[in-house]
Length: 275
Image (cartoon, rainbow, N blue to C red; front, top):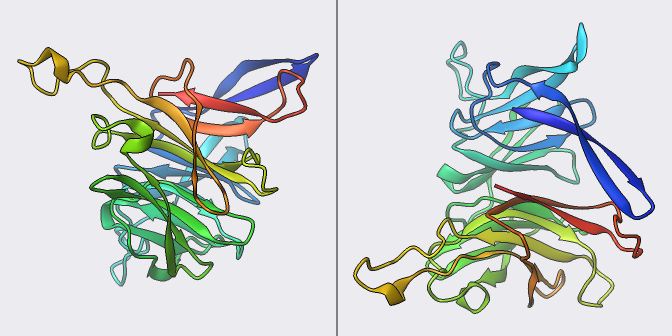
């Protein structure tokens, strides 16, 4: 179910108002993970069905969105898989060249598709990935993709052609604690304001654990897992950890975006969605 909101920003206060449901839950969208606007439509990932939908306004009712499969394996076409073997799409982003880059978590890939017709541009790009989930692009056209590791999560950096450059940053026990390092989940990753003071955008990522005081060992009360719900920041140039950026009132934080200055301090505010 997708909803839209309007926003009033005045005298340092921000108010959101529910407007309407745009895509209803009986229209074939089963497991949405991410959505982005393109020049002419809205694209939505369908995680379990391995599809990307294009959403356009219903001509007879602009407040209602119509779903059209855009990137998918058409059963009526037997020559090739138009989805390039897409497996559990989690995140997508438009590259500097206008191509659609989709994180295919189950196949450990980032796949690239044409924004005009949804057909594959490259069979696959990027490597050095394990269960990737989030993708971002910096101002120079470099890509950043989260990748699972035995010691937490790596943020892998790739150049504009998808070639691996370096492990840019590591989300490890020093940031989330030893008892939670193998249990954390990634919510979202975005470039945001410069908090490191080097005049470049810094990288922010939400992490959380699905546990709150659960015992690793039922017979050991000392084995309780401390919940982790926070936004972590990294220097956008060096990848050096800047530590916890926010945690108050967060509960399994998923999506986030830097938006309007709601408290009139002259800075963009961070908006975070709890799961």
